[in-house]
Amino acid sequence: DLLHEQASFVTLTIDGRLRGCCGVLEPRHQLATDVWHNAQASAFRDPRFAPLLSREWREADLEVAVLSPLTRLPSQSERALLGDLRPGVDGLVIAWHGERATFLPKVWQTIPDPREFLRHLKDKAGWRDDFWPPDVEAWRYVTDTMAIQRPAARSLAGTT
Image (cartoon, rainbow, N blue to C red):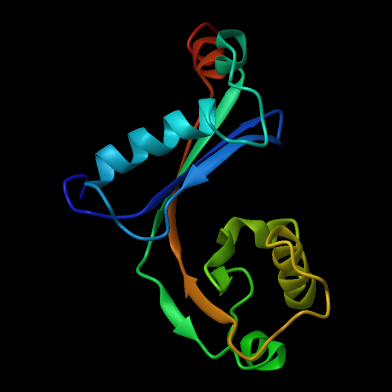
C-alpha cells in the first residue's frame, strides 16, 4: 500500500549497467514519498555518478525494490552468518561502529556464491577480506521488486 510507511531502493540502469541506486533500510515515509525521494536521489545524488542527463533518462530502466522489515542474523562469525544466509533470497546489511553496507537480493544474480557475496559486501563497506570483529552486526531482508521499462522502449513498442 502506497500510503503505509515502507523502505525502498530505486535502481537506474542503462544498457544493463548501474547508473544510480539509492534507498533507505528503515521506513521513514509513506511508500509513495519514499520511492519519489529515492528516484530523485538515484538520478541526481548518487555520489558514484554524475547527475542523470535528460538524454539518458530516455535510455534508463528503473527498478523499485520495497524492503521487508530487517531481521537480525547471528554474526559472531562469518561462518554463523553464512550458515543462515539464503542465497538468491536475502538482502544483507552488515554494520560495525556506525558504518554499514547493504546488497539488495538482486545482487545474487551477479554474485551467486555466498562467500563471494559477503566478500564483495565487506569490500563495499571498506573492510579487508579477513576483517570480522565479534561485534559486527548483520540483518537480512527480502524485497518485492517492480521493474519499469525505459521511456524510449515504451514509445518504440507503441509504434509497430
